[in-house]
Length: 377
Image 1 (cartoon, rainbow, N blue to C red):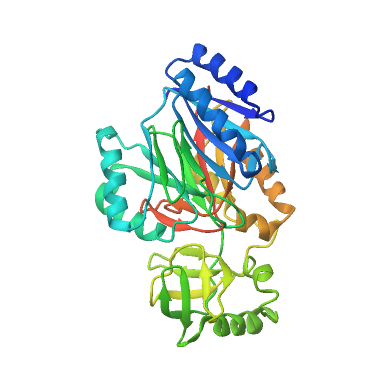
Image 2: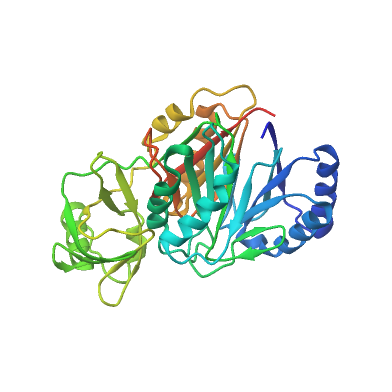
């Protein structure tokens, strides 16, 4: 990939898509498209695929709850990110078990790898329940031959949605991937500090925390929030407060993995976005206050200084947006200004993939920002 061009479309009609893709095919015959589609515009996926098939334009895309357009979150429109030449890419469907899926993904990626170290950028269906396990298994296959970066796509309602596509297929329970060339700066940060009070997930099943310190998870979670923050948590207000007080998994390297509880089950277990290993050391995190640094300084440090006219590919967690509410757009504006980027292009994500800070091991995060600095056109 020597260059890129950003195309933001508000007219997503078949004619508009056909006209743009035909013009770009003539201008850049080796280019392909990375498409980010707002959920409200998902009906445009079929005509987009048809235009790409007809004109021979490579395509990989995903559907997200909303798009990032410079300083704004918008619930409509489409980003077509033109990559020239189109990097190696692919789309896998029917992912079910970590080891098998990692073998399929590594088998697809391996032929495109050389002596350099590209970034493996992944688009996963948010409905997958084994993302963290898949990443562990994938690292055993690819190790440090690639950098890892990615996001979850889908509906913010967490209803099943065929959210991943190429020029011929639209799939759910899948994974899209492409190889960004070496040298593109990337970063992931969430900015959540770890409190000193910890507990243990004494029983878990996949994404569900069943028991904390040997009692029903919700009872322990509710008591800690009440004693630490003075909030009376119940079933009616659970989701409203859970985005402000996610669960943190403490790792040996002092890194915190954020897990946002999104469902309080009838048995008192907490269903989270992302797996929680049994016997994990947990804490309840207080989301950073609006206006705090929130990890932006560390994010910018890892992105490094911009070149003139650089543009930033950015994914912003939907749970983070729920916490910050209107301030989320202030955070976008601050990031754009501080990064020196000419434009921000991206989407609202439902989980984020990468090694936080300088860590290269692929981890599944919530409440994070994921960035890649696209070189000047």
